[in-house]
Length: 488
Image 1 (tube, rainbow, N blue to C red):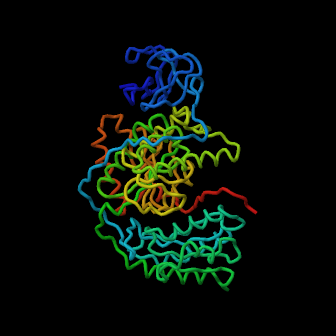
Image 2: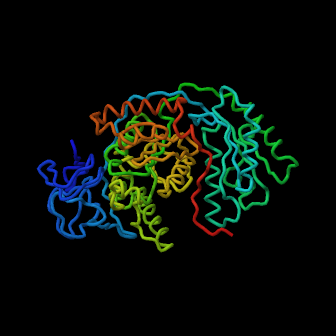
Image 3: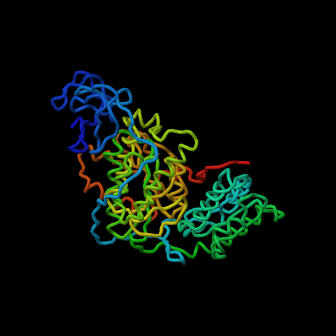
């Protein structure tokens, strides 16, 4: 197999390898060289006609295109428009329950379950980033066998922010502090920042004083030493937790893609979608985000909403994000990125139709605002941008214990929770074994989706039980918070 047709309605196929001008593939003579992951016309397509991939339009032909031609930016244009009106046409089926499985996790006092038992040191403001790092370095001696790590985080925000922009920061920090992967948390403030600990507590409330402690640096003579003493107390608390058998109905997993290529929607995203359906059948939950990467495929998700109320929330999710783009004079179809295009993705609809594959076929049960905690079991949609770091962090602070991150190009980044990198193709997996955890390219090498989903599900449960991801072996301590506002 040298080309792949995704849907029977498609008028294009995807090249599975680099192909040469003049080659005959499935009775089609190529009119030019076609790079791996790029599209080839199956039939003659007139100027203005729709290019169909995944069974849906991904744009229109800029010119007459003959059968066997390479289809990309030179002859395909995006049709994605600005804000639109939509009609609710429910189109979904229920996922049948299957037997739950188990993993070894940490049950918290509030009933939530973590897949890591770490002690986190969280700054309210970038001014104390050096302080929290010094506290981390001075606290390593207090780590025990039951504690998976002591980590300080850093970010540049928390001061000189106004209104909703400051609120995003405070909501983000609240989600981070409440995260079940943290057995205990030290929150460090400077004292004079806009987002000071008093303001943070308006969102956070008064947490368990055994689990969460606060330190205001300006109020202490030696904030580093006092911080180390507080971490010692927190480690004693976190040490009380040990791994026990937990049900998959306690899992909340984020779905994200980045550095995508022409295979992402065929292999990695489809595998994650199959995983999502399996987890939901076993009582678990998943969150799909990257709102700009729903543009052009949004009606698929809208019509899978369980209620008309959720449909209307999804319409607002899409149109509000388009409004955010337009407020700054940006087009709603500027995506995909240069790397995406080099990998064979041409338009935002092309990218989005591949992106939403990660959501499988489940009913949409809820729509979450940025940093809102996940509460409803099943599949939820989350307000966040496509940016890899910001979106993955958003999934974490909405309660995901783990992020599944698909990629066709590769990336080493990590976020505060384990981030599983899934390659869309085998060459990437073989080249970047220090980055990539799992190879979905096996679907093009002969494995069936059913076989690989079972294998991947077991692999994820192993990570939930303590196996480290490649991202955890690098760095996960730089926080990325969504920003939309004035900095004083």
